[in-house]
Length: 428
Ligand SMILES: [Zn+2]
Ligand SMILES: [Zn+2]
Ligand SMILES: [Zn+2]
Image (cartoon, rainbow, N blue to C red; front, side, top):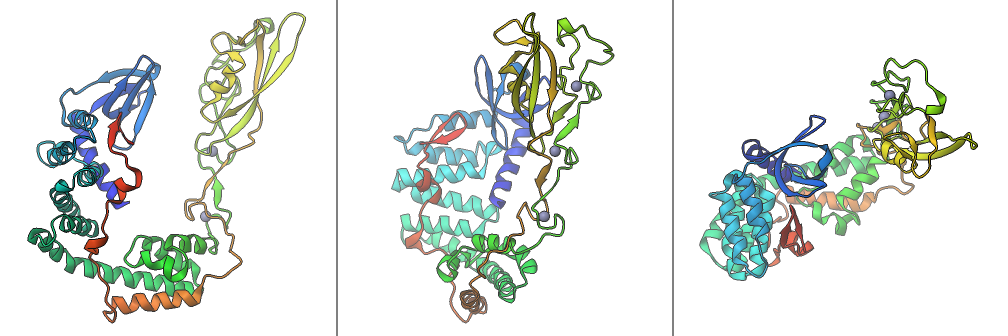
């Protein structure tokens, strides 16, 4: 997770000065790079994500032509896997002239792709990546990058020196991490799951954690999930859910536009034969309340129609929070409140009690229900694993913190083969 935060922060800083700005009619503002504009949509890449906005929601677009972020998007889109040199060139640009648009995630991918596409670039690409990772204090990954550089140029003194410099710090980090992990495992063996849990949650990505599957038959992540189910959360009494704070458990929020009456402000009486089109509150569509978005509430909404000779007809639609209009539009025209394909007028709209909603995952236990697995954790194997970790942390057994040069590979790119950049995303 730490990697992500750093990347987001860097982009965030850059974005603040050079970003395109899209302002919505409801006042929300998105900053980033506008990737695409069509008649109906505007696509913007922000520091966090890529969004497609409806054109009708957009009040204004301010573009910063020629800013570094725009330049970066342009250069990324021009990448071509048949021209391998472009990837390394762009990586260099991103750490040099284009450093205001720098983000680590992009650099990782560019360097991995450059190395993969053209072995003769691997040395330079991995040295560059290693240097930037070191600057961000991501030392173990930096060592992996230097190891890849060594693989590309065996015996190269620069890569060798960088790795050796990192070694001492990595050994210290690893020893501290191993002691923490061993302490967490000791608590599991003792059956003190409540104390073990927070320590395990911190240990998932630590040194030696990768050996867990072969040593205890499950990853630290799986062990953490197993232990979490054995701990009864005091906040939610083990249910894993708590009452939604936004709607106080009702799944509904009173409509502030009409004060809960379902009618336009100041409306007193209606003429039945005209239906509700002139009187209905346009925010809650006559229900007097809206579904709570926080707990993703859902309910049925009943629509009552009137037409000479037919008098009453009920239709029920199912609505999800924030999408009430979409549900109603399947039956009625929301502009004049008539049936979608006939002349029936809408007499009344009434929301039924929610069938879903009112609960949010408990923040303390992250929504994990108290549900102790029947079988105990494999304590005998955990003891052996723990001893092994302690022995290495105390220097009684060797533990190599630096990656084996013969074993390093480019996980990110090898895993997904996404080498092209189209519309703000890496694609195959
Ligand atoms: Zn709610
Ligand atoms: Zn209302
Ligand atoms: Zn809880």
